[in-house]
Image 1 (spheres, rainbow, N blue to C red):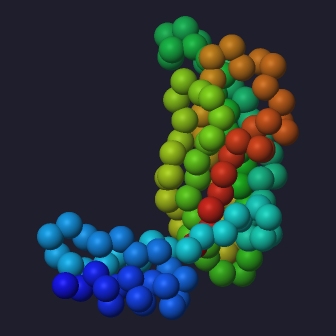
Image 2: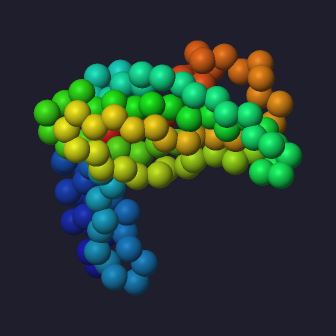
Length: 127
């Protein structure tokens, strides 16, 4: 049984191992860090776009994300706040100094949502 060596290796390295069903092989989950807190990525602008009723209505929220590093950065985006539609674990790999707008959520009647609430609900995890 392969699980004992896999478990021992994961305990020694601090990695999280998940056994693949029926194979006895491990898939190690990449360790991630908070991109904003570590300075790997920055949210430089928050955009709001009021959608028409034909598009389902609501307020579409986007963020302008900047990679200030001279190397590429792999990361995932998740919007943790309440929303009708929201991005969940969308992976991206950006080149050095890349700046791009990403849609993160559509909220119903979201005119009272503040920039700080949006920043708090956008989770960027770097790998």
